[in-house]
Each structure stands twice: as C-alpha cells, then as structure tokens.
Image (cartoon, rainbow, N blue to C red; front, side, top):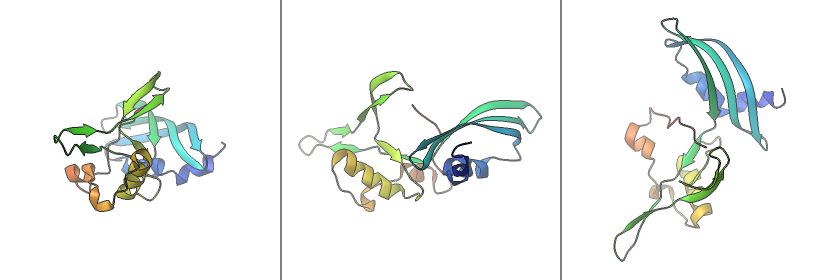
Length: 156
C-alpha cells in the first residue's frame, strides 16, 4: 500500500484507463501487483487484469504500464562522404540479462508531454549537441498523426 496514493498521478495508469475500450472489453477485476518508484515518480506499474471480450471469452492477463518515454533516432551525416551513422547508447539491462546492450537513447517524457523539449534535452545530455524544436521530427506524429499517442511496446 506504500505509494498507492501516487497511482492516480501516474500518467501510464490514467491514460490506460481512458484508452480501455468498454465496447471491446469488460474488466471484472484489476489487482495492483507492484508499483515501482524512482524518487517521487511512479515509473512502472504491474497489474493482473481479469476481463472478458465482447463475446464473453475470458482474458486473464498481466499488464505492465510505464510512463511516457521518448526515444531518439539520431542520424549523423558525414560531410566528407555523406555516409550516415545512427547514434546508439550502450546500456546495462538486467531484464535482458546482459551488459552492453546497444539501444536508441531514451528517457522519461515526464508529465509535460513535450516531445521536442525532452528530446532536445536528451540529445544534449548524450551527445552534447544543442538542438532547437525545429531541428527535430516527431516520427510517430509524421507517420500516424496527432490521433495516435505513440508506441505501446515495452522493452528491457
């Protein structure tokens, strides 16, 4: 029950609740199994959801919710030969069970929802490059428009 009061401040939870389609699913019971914190912020929520679909078929499932994140796909073009390079960070990921996993730089979006601002901050932290909002392209928005709120997969 520790930190349970923070649950309703967690955007991953509140956005998931809004997104659940009550015409497709009927939720019978939600059990909060764990609530992970990083300082004052909820970073991960694990639920057991007992539900059924619109045909009455049971759908017992585990749900893992994370707050909004931003990943940066950074392409650097060499002036001399126009060869392009993608910037990756190397992270230690216990969930994968290995050290030195190459991945795109990423970070929590916080509650602002400011994709460009957080991306610019992240790029400056990782590469030391200062970019403005106009230097960045929201690939989710470019591909799917403003009606789509991002990719919902969860990695290690």
